[in-house]
Length: 63
Image (cartoon, rainbow, N blue to C red):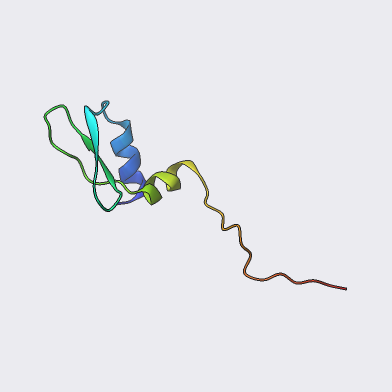
């Protein structure tokens, strides 16, 4: 699922609820009871933040 797909899901009418699957993904539950496509944590983080690796690949020290 792309970030645009996630934005579209979050911009629709407020969901009646949410369901979390065993793999950690979430899906909105519509008022008719049907679950939408799953959204992963990575999809959501891609929308709201830039993930930065705190550990550098290498460090050069000059004496």
